[in-house]
Length: 190
Image 1 (cartoon, rainbow, N blue to C red):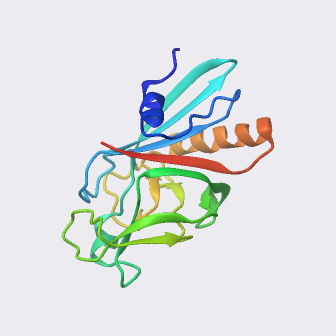
Image 2: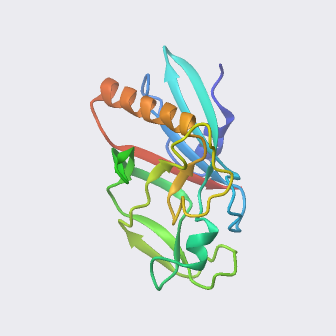
């Protein structure tokens, strides 16, 4: 397979592409709308080399909160929405609600949406460690969630549990290959 076109978009935005060798993972989200849709309408890409050949996987995900948390935010400042950018080494293989997931360990910047109008606001931001994890929705592969609802209060959430298992497997391959347990996530917007 030739180099995935999504990596050209990453570079065009001024961000690094990781291609040092096998399992040097490029984790990329693409937010397709500036509205809270309560659906898994965004894209999660994993691009990496395996035996020197490019691999590209794409999964449905959400990069914004579900309606439940938009209307009832955890914080008075409003619901968190990860700002587009490349967040270098900000996640580690850790836990989210007791299961393996990518856990935020370094500061990121989020927009805070407090007006609950279902459009992502860009006028108030905060930087910090807020628990913006990368995890799955429902754990039951036979009952795939169609709505985000409570699955995300600002996290990046992969819709299908089996897709999420692939992500975790590849993260473990990166750790085994490179002996580091930090991951960079690049979030683009259409």
